[in-house]
Image 1: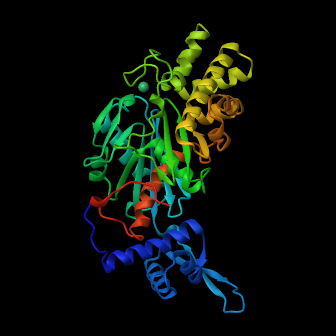
Image 2 (image 1 turned 30 degrees about the vertical axis):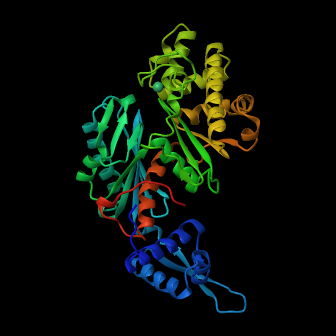
Image 3 (image 1 turned 180 degrees about the vertical axis):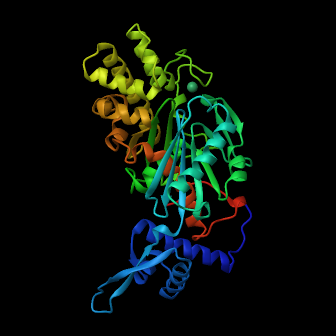
Length: 412
Ligand SMILES: [Zn+2]
């Protein structure tokens, strides 16, 4: 590895990044407090804050009494200094959301597109049109957008050409990022949807302050974002966390990935509806949109329908098995359940999932973990995708980096 001596410019960027992160994740602070948090000298903090004030990224927010001294001016991030877009490219819907600099949602737009997800060109057209529509609804020029992130239902290889491999929607080596950056006037970042959700929950939601966690996403497909020691666990080619294709039955049911016996073939939304149709000897469950079908399944079970109850019981067992395996392998402090199907099933099955997971997992790691629903609900993937752009923005000290310098990754 080649190392080069940091230049004065590198140091300046690092100092700006340090002060911005302190304000971003620690909340409003005075110059003196920023100096203590960042270990920068008060003179350096004063210079950096002057730059950030001039750039409009930070503003003064009143003053706070100090013990025996002059009141100290508090500093805060200027939430309206720029915007991020988060995109959840799901298997049933593309969700496009706009966030301010503090990642507060501003306006959301959904683009429902079930039929043409197999066509990358159609998806790109929908995303570009949706981005324009969201900005217009918020009466913001696209130039105010710092960057956008996209969570996708598949594997994203960050090496050389960023490509998406998503067999569930028929994508192999699709250069989604390059296509979008040709059409959008800001940097775009790409990662797997479950990893994006894990980032959102770790930075701002149910995983705040937790160094080791796993976010599991239940939808048509399944996924997991695993964070160990405050960093996303990516593996050699960023495909770590393909939890849906963990084998749970040898020679089991056929999976969409081409293999058999995967967890997704038993716990994915389509698998649950197929199972319900088989048990009820009727195809009513399959003659509706998947989201309606899962809603119908949960309400039928709570109304005492024995076939629906059996499907939920089986789902509970498979989910507990999948979570127990994650607990045994990764020893997380927290498991966070999300995804549209996870959010609908969770309230009905979570108490039983906790009980069964205790049976299936090893006792020491189980005693260290809590299992909860995700904090951001259906917005978690879009928000997590937006954090990809935020992370880059903070690392660059509050500057929009050139398109050639993109990286992904969670750094707290
Ligand atoms: Zn599979």
